[in-house]
Image (tube, rainbow, N blue to C red; front, side):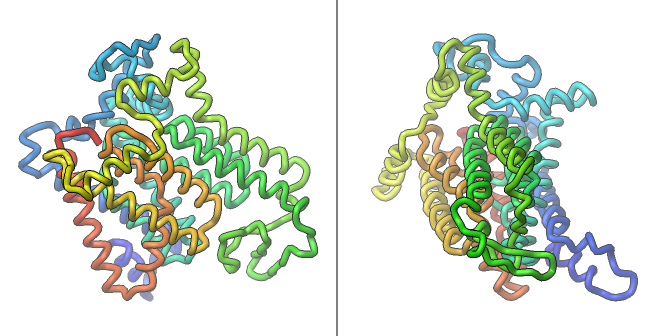
Length: 433
């Protein structure tokens, strides 16, 4: 039986019952996330394939080296595209600043190795993300689905990045809580978190667009819809309106006139501007530092061949998989990437049909287009799916309608799969993720 199930049963039993907060979906999701990641670290630590390498060295491979270099020495002073991809100087300009900045702050204040600080950040951020995901999914489909969504996200195909020196966990946490704040009309908090997300990963631009779109819809709604046509349902301190497109009326957010008037309107617009500003701000900074407006894009292309090609490289990879022409040694990964992209599109479609809150759909759709439509290391595409947590919603809803034994079996199977695949990726897969 999974830990969340045990806690839930203990919470329901009589006698000296546990505090109410113990049974909250966010708490159960965090407990499950931490256990899942602990299992992964334990298996990694005892695996004979580690061949005596220090565990922190394994957790800090690939992009981790770039983040450590930035945390210790800062960014390159100039742009030199003649430098080989192994030269950790100019390439540092491709990495957004929030994660390495936190690494530096924690390492400097505690004396910890920057890699240790980075792993602690990733694990803590992953737990925070799981809590927020559970809250958003609970708003959508209830407590059981909320818990299952947090657990299944922790078992994503490349969820191992939540324990690596990688920025995905931190980015996901910032994105998730941006939407939690936005859903509750905590405008300024949503804007600040959205800006921070935009300064953590390039796909933060999708967060900004979603926030700005929601702000625009909220502010303009009274001008587009006559007030007499806005249905109000009073009860249990809840109300619904056409603002709640894609939201279950029983759990819809409040629609209050104050949310679109006076100073609140200014706060909403501020949130939209802040959320949109993060990613362009860093790109502009790199441009000024490098002396060319497309400096960030140039570094990405020169060092990793990463650029938006409209999905041409993904289509080429898919064709090779279908024709059995994959590069020897990477056939399994090629098949996994193509399969996961197809599943991701299917899950996004189900999320749309399932009426997931529409700002989340805007974020997920833009992010998925960026993942599928970009060239570069194809194996990284699985990692890029991790922050698109919305894809797990329809799967969790389906599982939530199954029997308890089925839920336990599926979650345990997912834990086993993410543990085995994560260990294989870190110890046996010869290329970067």
